[in-house]
Length: 285
Image 1: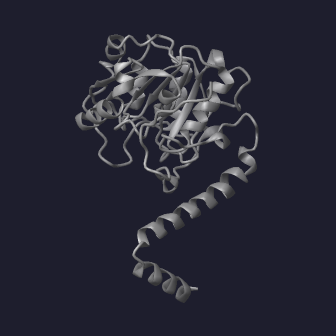
Image 2 (image 1 turned 180 degrees about the vertical axis):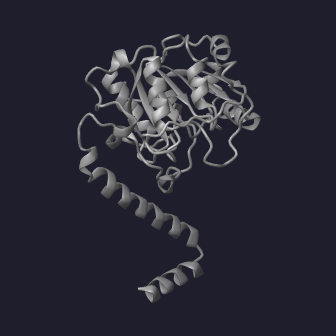
Image 3 (image 1 turned 135 degrees about the vertical axis):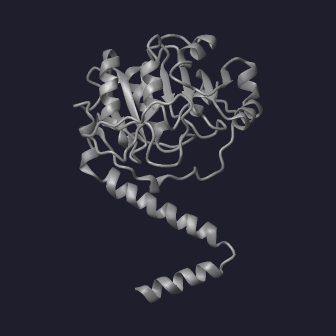
């Protein structure tokens, strides 16, 4: 077996498209893992669970599909989103919503990323379908940023991914009541553990395990804010919450970290098959 692997990788290494072949092999391996451990796993078979609905278009993982399924179940109202930490706009949780007609606000702290957004999404910015704001988000300024952008108090979706003070920023949002919330959790900590990164207004992620909060801490915060935990991405990165008055019997209970926690499977992360770009589209009249 060892000799076979050595011969195989030797041939690949000598090939001019080694990286392409290796990437293809890794994709096949991750697809096989997902098929065996997600789609063939009885744990995820119940129709009220969300994980089997994962689909990746512009999202980092399967968030696009889960978000679509959440709103298929609870419906939409104003189809307005707010997302913090959107990067250059081509890999986040609301880009797909934008190109399918939603309206919203992006807040991003990187000047280079905001410049890229202004270039790529000039049409949406000009039409006011999209607003982008360059700002470093804190618990102290978040509600004023939303107010300045005329965000509706009962928007459909809020997505929070700022690699640090996620918990504290969501906690500070009291005036606004999104119908669904997507927020990054720290899957390093098991589902029964309460852990929250200590708040510092100027905190940035240092690349370590110290970011955001454990799923249990977010679950408890959500309860106090009137939300329930309805699922997580299979990669163990984002958690999904729905306002309690809307959840009804649409989602799998109990709405606890112990039930919905997914461990960190960061090895499954990958970019979409083709490089992302902002696309215009139409449908038959």
